[in-house]
Image (cartoon, rainbow, N blue to C red; front, side, top):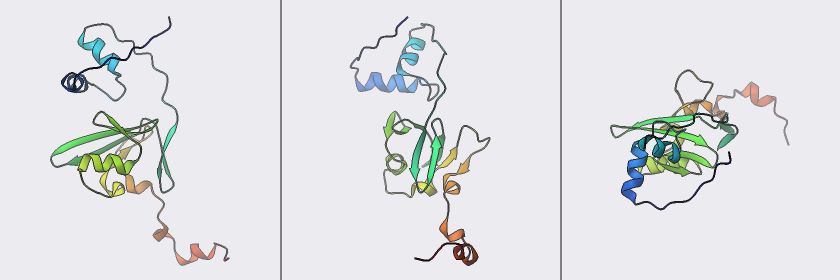
Length: 146
């Protein structure tokens, strides 16, 4: 059976209500409305594939979660195609997602913890970056001179 979609316009109050009833990042608006209207929700989903380039040589698979407690509120974001999903919006870069949460200019690498689908625990996202400062002078000797 082919699935068709139709765009509907809703007020901001209705949109907020829909988002408040989101159980997970995998919930679509259709899933949420079906749940609220007591219509059975199909759980057949294709596996999430692809990855998001965060810069500094770091890419994370779609489905990677980001977490931050900021001003006594916990924020959870997710890497998806097109960027970082946080608070019902998608941001093309980690910096933009960070600035949206903090409403200021923060260092995104020091702001978030990350949990990739293969991870069992949260780690600082900064731990994923390769740090040039961690190279010793012996390591640098391996690089050819110009």
